[in-house]
Image 1 (cartoon, rainbow over the protein chains, first blue to last red):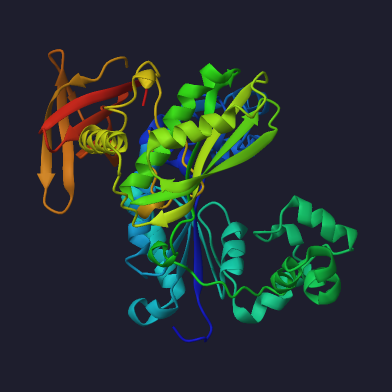
Image 2 (cartoon, each protein chain N blue to C red):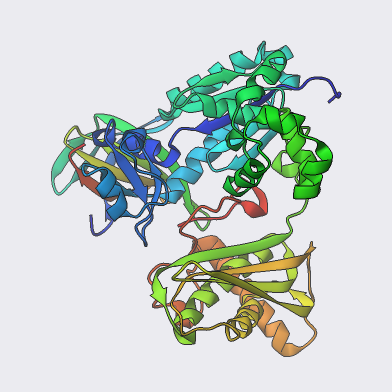
Length: 410
Length: 81
């Protein structure tokens, strides 16, 4: 693609999980609805009817009911959402191969090279909206702009079911009065730091002396200045061009807060098996095992341990994770555990030298083969047999429709 | 609903449009599918599964078709669609 003006689209599904549930069950349409997790009762998505009453993502069910006494709760079905998202992404790929999945319900499309085939960007947007509505009964908001930053801003401007175009010649006037916090990538902390410099709007940010921004924000200062002017040269990167992943990880919010080594061990084994299994499936191995522990007061601590040789064996990951766990204060209640493998070696094929290692590798291969055929955790460690819920119960923000980041959910 | 239940289903297999359940029977009663409100795919191991949220106008049901086994299962039922 040449360096000329680009046409970028950002598609954002409206209240995605809640809309899928409303489409599934006609009795829920038009009702204030919150989709909650199967374990802890936290709102993952609220319908627009519930949002109008003040229900927000992250509230617990009690808070949601306080805000909206007539609210209905539905336990989410992640597999339904993953399949729906995969189908929507496939529709997008009918219009351009340059689709960057941003999360389960958001994606960027570079349609610059597609205009010859389809006419205009708005034609593509209307076609996509019509297909999504016709085939799935869902609505989305689309923003069209010269870059990703502005396309994302545009899609946020009209919700639900909007289509907003920001033309190159209206960028300057739009940015002049736009609050800095409206831009994706400028969070509350940065907004406060900018306010200390008397910067409140994008116009002010774009004009601010770069040297002072660099002083306060380091190399990010330059990026902030460009953002203030509505500039963003970052390309739309399809997953196949995104380069090798740097880590494989899983985390798990426990059904209830747990204390003590033994109580946490079986969750760590489960996480180690999930990480190991995904690493083996995609033929990667890692030299460093990370463990993250989040306590009941949301204090989060992470530690790591490096190994001499890279591994993808669940038991090895588990043993390292347990060694790290022993360095934590386990008298405090824990609400979340996460295991991650980094320092990845790709196309990993290790030939074990010693009989014990060979047996372990053969056993893992046999377990993998059975689980590939009959489903995850069909054959598993004895200590996990009594665990009622196994596998990933949340859709990670890093989820992608294909490759190593396609995480199977339960 | 507590337990998944194998059920007899009449369905139309339409070229290019996939499968559409028309009725299912359960405990000697036939339920006419008035609307398939949603459909999605899933996989357990190497076994693909097609899920259908259907309504007979009174309740909402989740039917699952296993193409490999050629069998239908009633997975869930919710009152008052």
